[in-house]
Image (tube, one colour):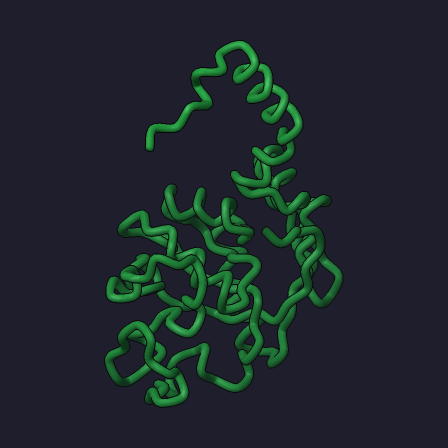
Length: 215
């Protein structure tokens, strides 16, 4: 998992409430058994005018020119500004996979669905909760200033606006440490690899029959 320390990125506004995980990554794309390749199908039903299926070449699709991520001014955006209850619906982990693989590193909204919120941290995406009035003001600023960027300083737990003003945010210490260190659940386990190997060696030495395989 990529480390998240300080990130500066272009902001894209998703001006809809209750964006559910089926909108983030539609159900037909859950057929894949891989954890990669979901970025091109992020917000697929809003992003394209034609129906999408796994394996389609995005270049052959018909993009929706009115959808925010298809507008040239938001090309390369890595911070998504959203409204209340972002990520509601089913608990599919594919939703943060698609956001991360598209290029988003951080999400800012007044509230997130609980399971989606947890899944973001496990996949290197930082969900930041801000008061509704603050989010509304950010939407206004993004609309008013093309190329609007924010700097997110996770160690200091602040969002730095273009004028230098700062918006503090809360994050649980354990989740913060995992993101700063680039540690997902597998990475956390591998930190104890030497202890695990020692335990396994001692266990086999004490109970060698456990090492026998049934053919």
